Length: 208
Image (cartoon, rainbow, N blue to C red; front, side, top):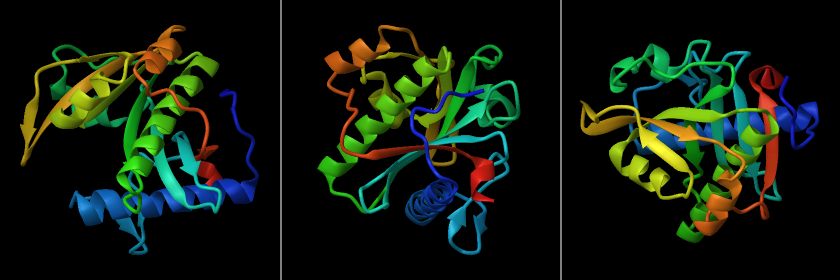
């Protein structure tokens, strides 16, 4: 069982999920032109948004979406293990204490300073969530430019293989080690921020 750092009502969870799915559609489908399923012309939801998916959603005081991410169990179906295992030199890391970060989404209706704060706040939430719930590592798939940014945050982040071309992008599998000193490392890197946005921690079933 996860220990939730923030308690939310059922209505709050449903609102947060809908705001997140709407923002994902605007970013990944409308802006980045990814070929993804869209529900009711409004929400980006795929086969990994199942009852086992878990979400961190950052909301402004008025309830507007600012940033979010989806966490998948790596001992269940997930993107790296099922769709992109060829990005890893060896077998993709799996286990009950490893989660995959997917759909790291920053709302597109923000100024650059707001986006940076939302990014830092979401990275902070990921680390706090991991340390509070005995998660020892995160994996993920990122294009090379985003991977290079992730590496600079201060935590221990490494590529799991060589970049592979997918269409017009070069993708890399990544592994982020979470350890007690990770918070201090992010603070030194100027990334650790706990204030300014409301965090909703929720599961897929809350929005159904």
